[in-house]
Image (cartoon, rainbow over all chains, first blue to last red; front, side):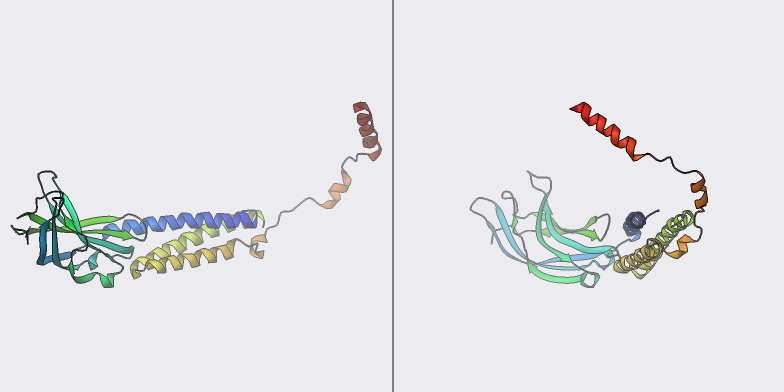
Length: 167
Length: 97
């Protein structure tokens, strides 16, 4: 502590150490948040359902997603990435996941949302297995913190079924 | 800055930084505002730097007591005469030739 620059260096390094400690505590404090999110997805219409020239089934549908993710937000949350995936089983794959819609929720004020949309990304199967297929729609989310650990979770909604015939 | 001043400066720095970190975290956590925490802590770091980094008069209250200058006169440093050094260097250079 004998010179100006030695003291300046000591303040800076110890200051950054304390900053790291604060950020660690902020990340740990996220674990005390027990969220209770809710979500509902309705399929309003199957717009069309056909087999592509290469033999893969493709569906276009209109979805209504309503969700309340406000309880996911803590003081250490930067944003929440959310996506809806169709999940189903085929003989080739134990789990197929097709992302149909996604979004970024920038703040708690936008975390209660209701959206009416056709699938943003194409729902194409690897093969021709979609006729009369039972599938789940799953709302996945990734909580991106300002500092520290990222959390991910999902809500699975069951009981959706594709039509028996192409249209 | 004297010895006691250096000790005080280091202690003050640590106390100030820990206190501002604790205060910033507590306020930020209870106000649910991460930015506020960072601003309070940044303020604390600037304040700490202002208090402990410059050489304030506060840190110079116990100056070291050096020996009296008269002691130096009683025991003078051995002086090297310029003549001897000059001749020896000349000898060396002539040898190299």
